[in-house]
Length: 81
Image 1 (cartoon, rainbow, N blue to C red):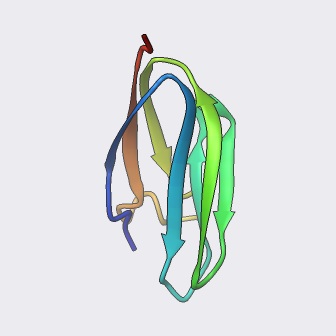
Image 2 (cartoon, rainbow, N blue to C red):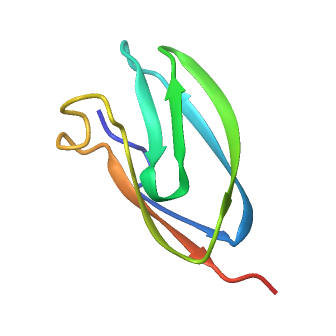
């Protein structure tokens, strides 16, 4: 019960993240500050895109107990050209 990568980085603007859930239960990829809350079904994968401004944004799984068990990380967004 953990994200395989806990430190993501991107350039501001459109950000794309590939999500894969190999577990036997649902997870989410959630960034409250950016209004991102994507459910990731059991044994499924998907690619999502969203807009992000420069800064450091926390992401986590909002299923109760998952963030405290280690499903959290940071997305660092750098300014564009």
